Image 1 (cartoon, rainbow, N blue to C red):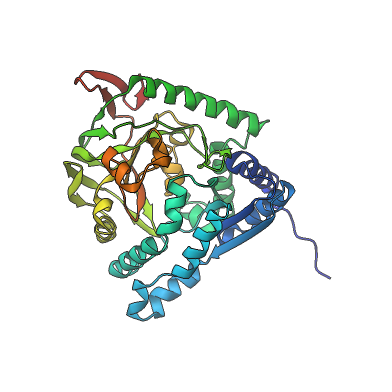
Image 2: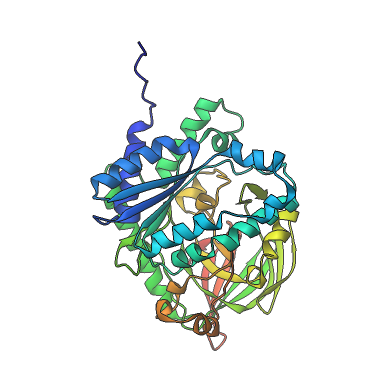
Length: 415
């Protein structure tokens, strides 16, 4: 007879995280289908989310799992032509599910350095193939046609990277604790805490929208950069309401306020302040020069070949689709941890994103055609990749249409 399994010490909080992800992050509606994507090691969180989704009235929950070992097998044994292929049929199915009203919940936690030792050319080709295949689904997400959210699950491979000097079980426990703190689960009333946090971010959004800056100017170590904002841009943050009328928080955690830059109005040099985990590869020490909105020079101290492949995905991959401001005093930055995971590290520092713009960050953006969005300065691309440029040494000014500068951030903090 098998002995009963011993519950992990973090199980109760995993259950609370699942409940908050469904009710606050997704705002899942009764009768709505839910599509989950997750690494295999996130199974405990997947099960809890599935339970809470059905309790909230989900009509059907479907999970797509990714397996690190299976991914590595492709790079070891697949024929060369494999790396120009992607499961287009699967991505078309996801797009169909979203068009039919399904919600999306992505669980992050896979090994950020999984493909670090693999052929960079194959990695880039596989990424391009996946980006092309997933475009129909990505567009529905970036246009906020559906309610969606991203949460994290601690996994052994990820924990080992964040806490390399700790035994596996201890590293896993520490990473779960960090997730609970930064996603506001480790408080008496997480739901109320999230509501208050959202209101605080919304007050910052209102201020920036009232000021109507035409550009942002950045100065810091390795960064001297001016970024024009799209015509009719809107600052967002603190949650959003999708076009299906459901309100939620697309990212858990979130500490940012963000908007759409103008694709043709970026000039100067920008240097990353944290590594970027991109499709299983770590890219670090990024330095980029923009002219008239387009990258004219880019390099990375680590993962340079993958960076070059990423920015060559299409013309829009060399232009910006998002700009976000995050104070250096954010809980994630103050944790002192490098998460090696964009969901967390982007909420520790101000950042920019190469690629696709969010139409929701433009006045009446959801009702505009592609050509109308482009005329406003919104970017179009197969990718949307955030990378961090903020630190305790970054100054940011807002610049009005007349050229008048207003200090927004000094040494990474709101003025």
